[in-house]
Length: 434
Image (cartoon, rainbow, N blue to C red; front, side, top):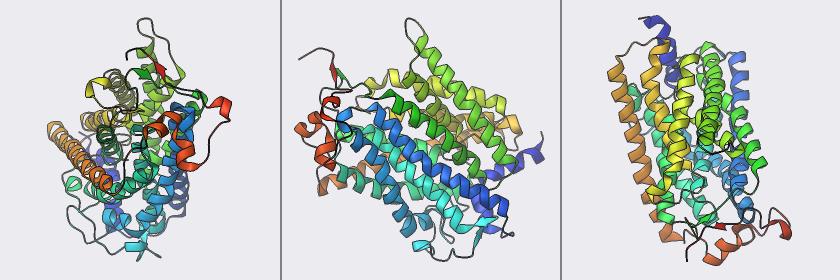
C-alpha cells in the first residue's frame, strides 16, 4: 500500500484546516488560480438560473431565475457578516466556528495556506451561494419570493454554515472522524437535496400535479445552463485544492470524465426500450455526474471516475422515474439529481479512494462516509422543516391559486420574460382525470 502517495490527497481535503494552522509564504500562482476559481464558481449560480429557468413554464421563468440570482446578493452579505466565521472561525468547537471573524474582521493581510484569507473567504462564499440556489428548484412556480428569501437566509446561517464547519474545519467533528468530502458532496448537494425535498413536502404540490405534466418551455436555456455549470464546476472542484498543484489537476480531469460518463449513461437509459435520447436528459445527466464526482474528485483515479459517473447517473435516473412514490412535488428533481447523486458520490468516495492509494481500512472509511451522509440528511432535513414552519408563521409560503395558474412573474416582479403571445410556452399538459 502506497501510503505516501495517498497522504497528499487525504490532506487536500484537509487543506482548509492545514491552511489555517500553517502560515507559509504567499504564492502568487496559487493566488491567481484561486481568484479564477472563485470567479468560475460564481458563474455557476447564473448558470443554474438558466438551467432551472428553461425547465419551468414561460409564465414563471423570471421568478425561477430570480431565486438563483437573489441568492448571490443575499448569501454574499450573510457570509460576510457571520456565515464565514461560523464555518471557518478559529477557536470554535466541534459544531461551530469561533466568532472572531464577524464581518470578515481579522482577515486583512492574513494567509490561508498560500493564498490571502480574503480570497479563501470569497471562494467559500460562492459555495454557500449556490447551495441556497439549488433548493429553489423544488419549489418553483408556487413559493412566494419573500418567503424563499427569508428561508434561504436562515438556511444559510443555521444549516449550511455549521455543516461546512463539521466537514471542512479542523475542529469539526466529521472532519476529525475522517469524512472525505473534497468539494461539497455532503455539505452542498446532500444538504440542498434533502432540504429541497422537505420544502416540497411542506409547500404541497403544484396545482394539477401529478395529472398535468409541466414541460420545459425552453430547452436551449437548459443546455446553456448545463454548459455554464460544467464550466464553472472546474473551479468548484479543482479550486478546492486551494493551490495550483497535482491535486487540482486530478480534480479537474475527474470533473471532465465523470460527467461525460454520466451524460452517456443517462442517454442510454432514456433510449432503452422505445425511448429517445433527449437534450434535457443530456443536460440532466451531466449535472448528475458533476454532483456525484464532487466529493470524490481528488480521491479517485481517472478510470474510477467513470464508474462514479455511471453509477451516479443510474441512481439519479431511476430516482427521477420513481419520484412520484415519495408523494412530494419536487418540481425540478433536486433531490433525485443532487440528494441521491450526492449520496452515491459520498459513498463511492469511501469505496474507491483506494484507487489512488489508501491509508485507512476500507470498511472503516465506509462507516465514516455513511455517518457523514446520515448526519447531513438529518441536520439539513430536520432543520429545513423547522425553518420553513417558522417562516410560515411570518408570512404565507405559497402564492395564491390565481397567481400560480397565471404565473408568478407579474405578481412577484411586475415583469415577464416573454411577450403576451409567448407566455403559453411550457403550459401544463393535462393528462386526464377530474
